[in-house]
Length: 522
Ligand SMILES: Cc1cc2nc3c(=O)[nH]c(=O)nc-3n(C[C@H](O)[C@H](O)[C@H](O)COP(=O)(O)OP(=O)(O)OC[C@H]3O[C@@H](n4cnc5c(N)ncnc54)[C@H](O)[C@@H]3O)c2cc1C
Image 1 (spheres, helix red, strand yellow):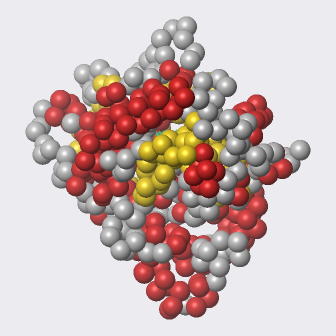
Image 2: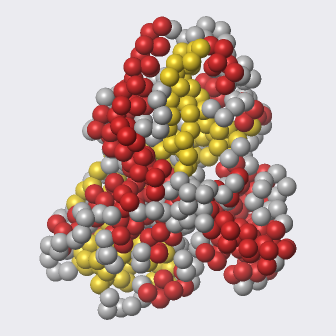
Image 3: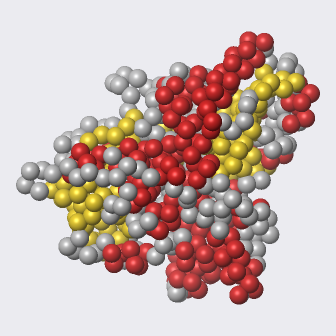
């Protein structure tokens, strides 16, 4: 992906693009990829970095949603289980199977979850990742030795998918780019233009790097801005009603010792009726999440004290090794772009997680809600609107068989897995220049060649792009990220031809962001 080349492409004044997408998270990238795979011309604008918003802050599960099954949202579960299967097929380097244990304390729970999970298996059909089973108390404690043994009868084990959300976003962007899509990060959409009939004809965006404004013409414009969707709807119609209810979910990162094995823990019903996951991820334990109504859409939402306490207390109720604030390595928060409930209802856990596509009178198509797991189907459903908007027929979506960038069945070992076929190319950089073989930080396996690769091939422009989304140090261990920032900034400055003042400004900015991922240890 080459930002300079793409910037030139979107400045071709006479060109009318088939689809222009606003927002470079899971939803927008899914639309851009689907459109490119059907041979449409497509440009995408992201105001920050790809997946800077919610799409880098998920629980990292590719799942049908056991909770949605319990809520009776069967069509959502069917759809998500099918999409889970497709994603595992199309991106084996970016995804893997993960086993989950639901601890069982009563005979009724055993019946309820055994039947529920059998139904979940059945709904996945030939895309099933393996049958759910009941295991004894001894086997449960062998697999999760830190689980509270009192009254434990055993566990129901089931299979779901796991991934690295920001990494998948980068590979979606690369796949779309290879199919001809033109993607730009740090390009904020600031205005929409219309013809005399009030129909959209294009938009204005600001290149946040060069501080320049440009205009682009489009046949169809897609608003895929997640929790920011209402801002675009209001650019289109200043009196548009609010459609989004942001709901915050936080995660804590702890040492993997708190679970002790390779299995994930799923608590299906916390004190307040929510779900808590404890999932091994990049050799750490990811614990979450919460569901707290927030009024403001933010790119860097912050965890509330009560959310941190809730996650720690709930986990402590199930574990013999009880986590405390002092054990928390990192905290991060994300905002779910939920469809706003009807007047008077505030129960976010009951708002449907299925996606919605809204067509405004101007022709603006807004894609809201949904899940990472279903990004492909959301993209397909949105691009299907092209014919209704323009009257032009288009081929059917081809993304269900589209391998994602880096696809390989020979998955590289260790942390190289996610790069797929790129792993060898990155390792070759370190052979050509042995200085690039140096570890970024002794506590992680990543090397400096990955920083060079991120700048040259993955459109990383800031230290935070590299340390938060190309390599996940910021959410895995913010102290390590802070300690690595200077080395990363200097390596980036070499590749991007930046001077000392750029390094200083980047370090200052990164420090400001990174401190939000640390919590006071008392
Ligand atoms: C706590 C939590 C846990 C979750 N866990 C899971 C999970 O395990 N599995 C799962 O499948 N789903 C999960 N989800 C849901 C999933 O993460 C979201 O549905 C998905 O990431 C939303 O993507 P999006 O593209 O709609 O929004 P975002 O990722 O927020 O993307 C919107 C983008 O639009 C950009 N933007 C805004 N305004 C403009 C503008 N004017 N110009 C240009 N760009 C603009 C923003 O910068 C942002 O990057 C979780 C969500 C949360 C909050």
